[in-house]
Amino acid sequence: MDSYEDLVALTDKLTSRFSELSDSIKAAEKRMVEIGALQTHINNYSKTRKTYEAYLKSGYSKTFFEEHRDELMLHKAAKQAFDQLDGKKVPSRHALHEEFNRLLVEKKQAYAEYRQVKKEMQEYLIAKQTVEHILGIDRHKRVEEKKQQKEEQR
Image (cartoon, rainbow, N blue to C red):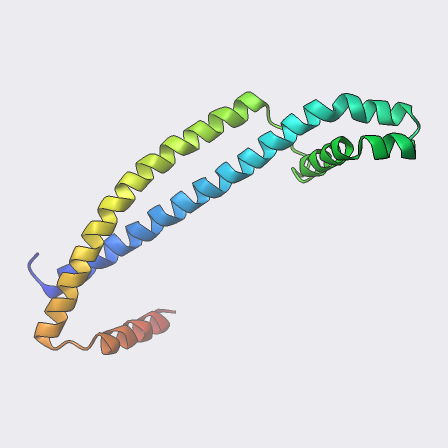
């Protein structure tokens, strides 16, 4: 590193990459939760299908409904979850399992890089703060200047 500007550029690059990795990990985790919920609904739908069919044959009997309330409510919740797929076909258990495993691998890889980038970012941010302190650079002034430059570019 030859200059303060290089240090600033590197810290900005590391901070940006850190944010990208963090967003990627969060997106993978969110999708994994969605997959888990969908798998649960698929399983519940399969388990309760015969009960629901019997309920239909009973002519929507209130007595039958009360006797099998829990199963019928699970079935209804599963159907509602499938309806929220916006016309998409309900994925197979196998496809969901594969997607979950792929996301898990991607998350683990991203997390390994995330830890490394976080460590480097923190080290360079400390170095940058030290240089700013030694050189008497006012960080607040720099932040305001950056904001002004961005506004001028718009």
